[in-house]
Image 1 (cartoon, helix red, strand yellow):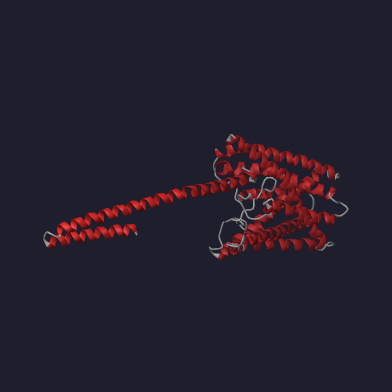
Image 2 (cartoon, helix red, strand yellow; image 1 turned 180 degrees about the horizontal axis):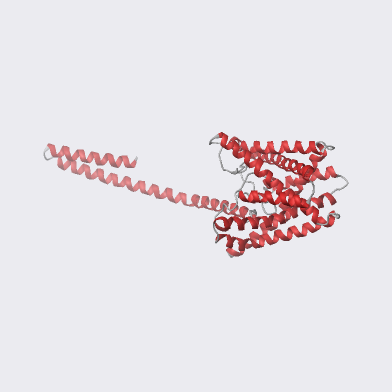
Length: 411
């Protein structure tokens, strides 16, 4: 198949996979986990419930960020079964802390900010502007515009804003983790909450069903348009430099975010309205456990996590606007690499007997050459013994040296 056609087909299938499977599963997991906390933690006191979620979430995320190198080092060299079990448990616990951090900050915003459209709009735009100035606006992205494929090499990695390592000065690394989790993470929550609440206010606020369906159409329409615009945006950003490149990339990512938040809002509300509405606890448990299990089996369980800080436009040229949803592309690439390795191993097995035969023939030739040299030396010694002694000694010594050299080569 034409490489260009295969690339286009894989891009289309990756986008379709992210839109139709990964995004609904991730939203289902978040919705189930979020609602379950409401069912079991201070049901009649939203303030206490939000504070518990806030503490569990942000402290847990900080610990995971701080201990990432230790966790990674501990599981190096472990068996495949041990690593698989540990990685699934890691995703489940880390996902729980992520949802709780967002739930706590979100509910506190509900309690103290109110629903004034002007105030929410001002706070949301201010938080987005701060993220833009920090070159961290891309961290508002989520499925279907992001798919995280689980790989052993970086399964436990949590990128920090300043990129300090735990092997450097400890206090700098701790400050880096604190800033990444509490500052950048909180700003991302503010932007998401603000956009969600604005949509609640302006899109059919008195008709939840129609509001959800409108968000569904609007969200998926924007997401599809975003995927379609990637080649143009890539070409544009490849020809820009400096602040202009970052600005264009951020505008494109913010446009994709509008589609993303609409997709999340619509799926969340449709599940609340139509998926076992009379058995809410069962509905929440099914979406919490079932969706996470599906994602883990598909090897993209870490898509439920909000972890690490990524810098805007840090990729080369126009790659900064390519949405990271390469799932099938990576799968086929791995399979191709495995096939190449198997083919190389088979060819090595086929050619090995021939190489051994050539080596044996080479050793046999060396032996024959050695025997011929020995015969010549014996004849020469016999003739020279009839001459004067000093000459015999000198020639004999040279022959001995040559013979020893040949013997060493044979050895």
